Image 1 (cartoon, rainbow, N blue to C red):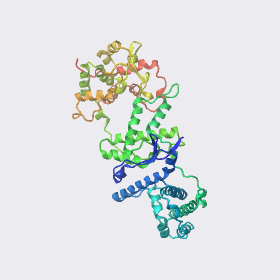
Image 2 (image 1 turned 60 degrees about the horizontal axis):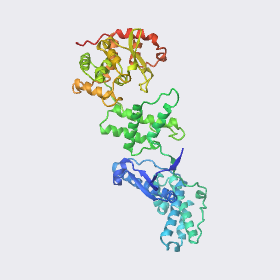
Image 3 (image 1 turned 90 degrees about the vertical axis):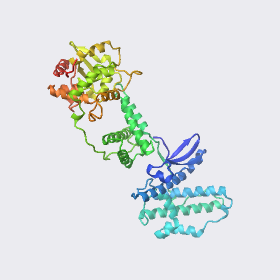
Image 4 (image 1 turned 90 degrees about the horizontal axis):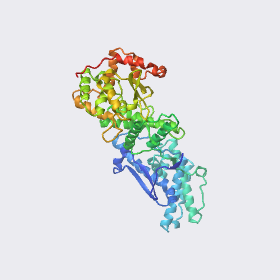
Amino acid sequence: MAGKLRHWKERNGRYSARIVVPPALRPYLDGRAELEIQLGGDRRAAIRNHAAAVASIQRQIGIAREKHEKATGAQPQPARNPLTAQEIALRDYQAQIDFDAEIRKADHRYARFDVDADEARRFVEGYVGRLSDDQLEELIGDRLTRARLAGNTDAPKGSAEWREIAQALCVSSYEAMAREAERNEGDFTGRPTHPLLANASAPTDDEPEAITFDDVIDQEAARRARGKNAKALPARTIKKYRDDCASFAKWRGDTNALTVTAAEGKSWIEAMQDAGDLQNRTVKVKFQNLRTVLNWGRQNDPTNFFPAGNPLTGIKTPDYTTMPSYLRTFTMDEARLVLLAARKESKPLLRWIPWLCAYSGMRVSEAGNLHKEDFFESDGRWFWKVTTVGNRALKNLSSERRIPVHAALINEGLIDFVKAAPPGRLFKGETKEDVSVQPRMSTWVRTLIPYEKRPELSPNHGWRHLFEDLCRRYRVPEDAQHYMTGRTNGGSQQHYGRSEVMLPGLAAAMDQIEDIPIER
């Protein structure tokens, strides 16, 4: 995978170091969502100065974090950008060398002053281990603070790790003073001699190229669409994942999927709950969609995309209570009211979709996607197909099915309507052919059965519940009921057969269901 400098930004030939500020810390940084240091238009110089700029920004964020922890009583967080003692010393050494070069350009008097031999000797005493913790802190405490604020270490004073870093910083300071003395004599070729720095690799800020949530979704959509008999992701499914990931990215202020943390996932759940706009069930679904996208990223690139595992795995999702199914179902009186109103409608969508759903248990979205060509006759009996043909999407494999036309639909004139319709989609919008029928149907039903009167009712899915109750009422065989409603029972046998041979038996099962009594 291609790499680039972390926190590196290029815009119109200019370069900068940029870091997004966590939302909780922005009040301590004048409300800024990001901190940026300009590095100029010279790419080489920008790369050379990038690490120091990033460290400076990280220190500002570290100071803000300390203020936040003090104000809120929050527990200090682990080091956010942990480095080894050698890495900290190497960066500190390079920063001092760069400063030496800059000040030589700015002030001609600088090179006239010799280095302080006594100070240099103190650094030697520091790195050989002769100084106490207090003496080390007095000597290089400012550099230790910078490393801590940059998130490179959280080692407490007096610990073995703290002393190791302090001694390493004594090495970097001594070596930097040695280079300063050499340069004063005109030698700019000097290199560190202490093994800690002499054997260290050059510092790097490389990290994988940022991968946005949209990148991951695009890759998964392309993977699903690949091949002769591919099962592509439906457009509305892609949109669902994009919308939920965009919501998360906006909340965290970053679209890079590679930087998601478990803490962010947990905080996002709590933020959605605290906002009070969404039900816990919706919060859970949005979080699960985000976690699914990260799983796709790992599946597509397990080496580089969270190789240690999805950070959102194991996070507890919200609990919620479910409403009893019967409360979401149309009563017989409500069904009569809606079907009678539909009979009076002139728009095909409102005229026929309630009737189709009432006598089939179809999902409203499935009914809205029906084409004239889906209806066919077999042995003198009419059926229609619920199919993916024509790039239509279904919920699952079991949703592909053929449904007998109930006698009530024939008596209403459905087949006459189908025969008279032009080829293609039966239910179109007024200005465009491809429309989403769910909100239209729900709004229309609510004009007949106001929300205040029946808040529990599901205006669209309620037909599905009602049809299943009708199947139970008239003792329709369970396998026929599952097939006609497109439900799965988990058994492999449900996908066996399903040829035209079964259609007469399926029609006989449908005939067991009596008409919903409606006055003519």
